[in-house]
Length: 58
Image (cartoon, rainbow, N blue to C red; front, side, top):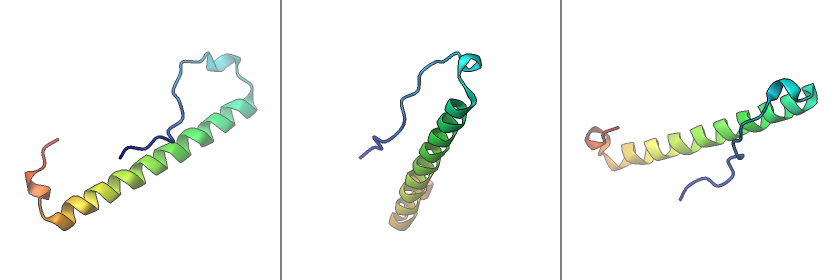
């Protein structure tokens, strides 16, 4: 049950990329971050609902 819609992360020479590509990539990354955070918060909520938040260690 993991997210599979995370954009692939690769190394780029960003100074060579045009501004439209930079903007597009920034938007893609921001969308992915927000989706992952939403999923993470759903998991936290389920942990809280089940009552074992105090037993979970990072």
